[in-house]
Length: 194
Image (cartoon, rainbow, N blue to C red):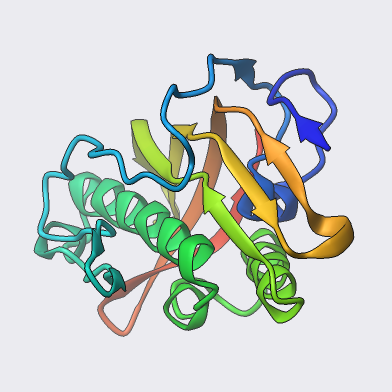
């Protein structure tokens, strides 16, 4: 099955984290290289990386820029979140991803479960990394934080997972994050498609 990122039918954040499907996306040309190759995306402005090593992808580390309770800190945390999502999709390891949100974040939990389902079936997700293109952070008068984002999702293919197998074209997606501070760290309270 091939899926394109277009239209207004929201399949949900769960599907996004597994396959890159969400409403309001525009098709882009597929990259010319095969999914298995490791292209060099623009390096993040921090030390966090998900670039593969000879032994596999490296788990991202929280950059110092993501620590303060500022607009810049909120933006850096959301960028780090997408790096962790990309890592989880490549490896099936969702442990770090699970620590970045509150237990009640349905969009976050659905995505984590979707990634886990693919790997529990012996499948893999090839490609489909996420790159933060634009972020508009804000804080409400009550102190709640939110970040409106535009994210580039690269082409992906899910293989070896039976009826979960699919091909997804590249595209750009909009997301709205709710954030809170807990014990001096950011946590995602909600992840939604506006």
